[in-house]
Image 1: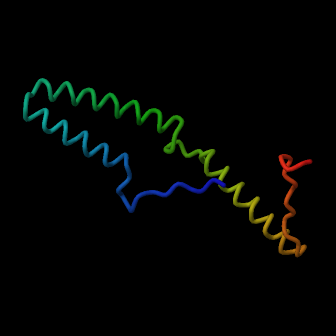
Image 2 (image 1 turned 135 degrees about the vertical axis):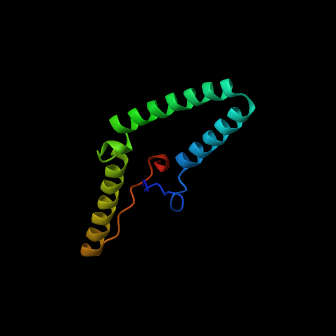
Length: 103
């Protein structure tokens, strides 16, 4: 059964760690060579803009509920209904015969 994905504690999401490493790399490149740092900064900015566009258009920032969360909710509701039905009837789920054990 699918389970909801767990986030790291607080603000420590992987995307922020990646952004911090990219910012540190940019700072190192600017200190090493200004032109190389500016080129890397332009590349980082382009990647950030593409990510922002995709996130706003299709992803988590679009406001649309994710498909995965609706599947998880459906699976939880299904298992809850099954447990309630078993508790209500007092019967456990019957096990089906294994086709490999046929004579």
